[in-house]
Image 1 (cartoon, rainbow, N blue to C red):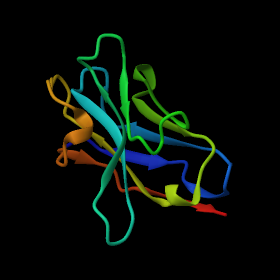
Image 2 (cartoon, helix red, strand yellow):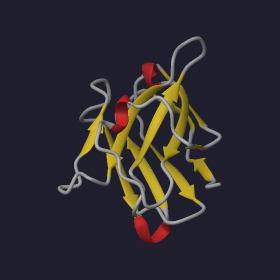
Image 3 (cartoon, rainbow, N blue to C red):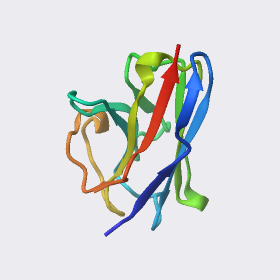
Image 4 (tube, one colour):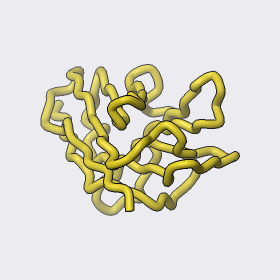
Length: 130
């Protein structure tokens, strides 16, 4: 069982920045999908940004609401997935979760369209005040 531990959440004012980190207990380089999702009370969890290892150009997928403001990246040497969040807005307030597939997997579809992942972190709260 892979463990994912998020950190970096907190409270900021609108326009501020935060960087979330997700440390995996094992290698992340060959996982089919990795990504960040968020959820607010009473709403479904939504994909924020994902990476698919089959994207040879390293391209990533973002929710329309965060394009141009958030950047997902990963450091394979540190087994860590990041989410840089700039120009934060009150509507970005949510619990943010890291998700990942097991090692040595492939997935031919959209990582952001998937609702189920075998591994989830415990979440880190992001609160943006106006």
